[in-house]
Figure (cartoon, rainbow, N blue to C red):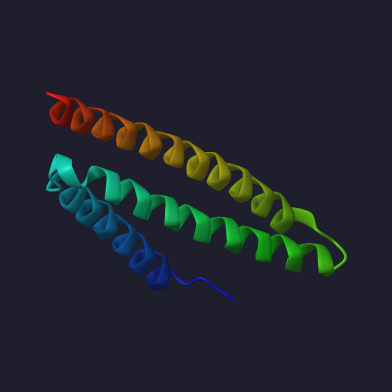
Length: 107
């Protein structure tokens, strides 16, 4: 696969537009929706984990793992840390919400 200058510029343009769009969308989310948004981000990290596992399987089946296996392992480790950390934060947020509801109901 040959990456031409036009394809590189198009890819960078899409990446920069995705950054701006993501920032605008996330900054407009009200605080009550942050927990469901975190759960959605955790699901995306789960998809990344599955993709890294598939890539590492393909890299090791070729006989010479090389760079693909290294990148797959790095992606797997980082996505796993992100997913576990995200679920821990989501769980903490849900506990805080449940604690507020219990205090209101107990009064």
